[in-house]
Length: 159
Image 1 (tube, rainbow, N blue to C red):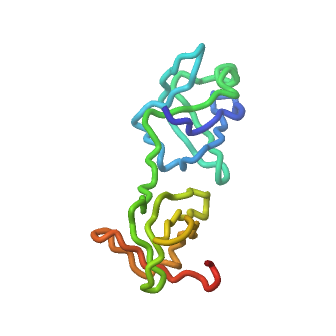
Image 2: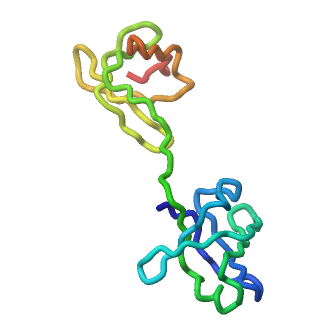
Image 3: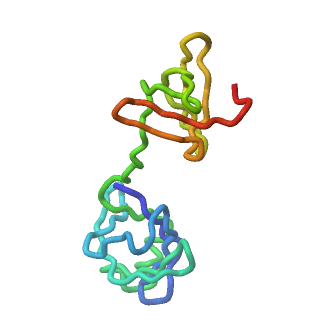
């Protein structure tokens, strides 16, 4: 189950609720599939009857069987889930690739340090200690997955 929102407060007297959306946009929510709200440790399915954006990260929703202010108030503070898993970005694993700097051999990738916004490669030169090289798309001159070769244009003075 994926948490997509939290019910922040009731909205109006007809059972509407204000959702705080999380890592999802309204268009990504399938109105044909139920959402789940946990009661007593069990996920209870609800169908979204209507949903309208309110700003960039909130929405007003009406759920089936929630038709009064009292019903909506009972849901405040609860998380909203959908079935499924988040798809992870298909990130390339460069372990075993040979790294070059403008055609000059540097070494072989032994691992990756996945620093958010700044992934780095651990590279083992033929002679010397393992080094850490930033992997940025602006540095890539050529990538050849069939031969596992990566030619980079690294900034001067990096070594």
